[in-house]
Image (tube, rainbow, N blue to C red; front, side, top):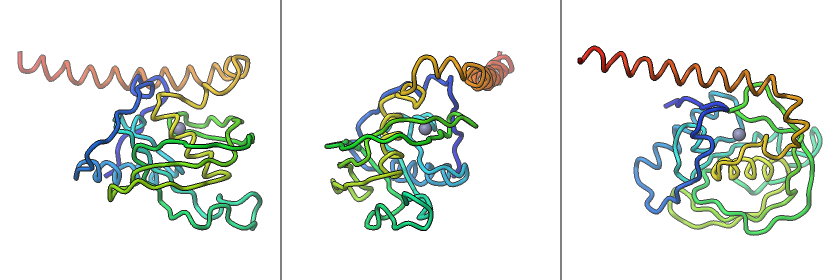
Length: 198
Ligand SMILES: [Zn+2]
């Protein structure tokens, strides 16, 4: 089932993760719904906060064409099965530093150059409850770092300079305004319900 993606300005995006201690049917359903939502939005990653939840859960799926340094080059992470469903993810080690372009499903039409670690060693719990450790590099490593940031209430604009943020102030304001308007509409509907019952 497709869920609604919350955009910049929604307070949920600043909430921090709640560790997952039990993998229940609801957890599995949330993971499936997040994958559906991510594919529908043609994204490569999605974190629980972006659909209004706080479980320490994110999903990532990098298509083969993006898991390369240059077009038609060899895959960077041939042994990592996609999609990745990451519960309680934790970066154990990171190496290198590289700039690259990122987008975010919660920031429509905004792309930013962000510096990230080039390679990371990551521990996570899979849907079967097993604790796994993998080493990933390149764009996949970037996407996972972006999603883990979301789980900690950190957004990709937090990584750019004040000057750069001011430079895109208009775009950010527009997204925030739309988000607040949507939230308000929700509230009006709720109040309407209350009025009817009064
Ligand atoms: Zn994002």
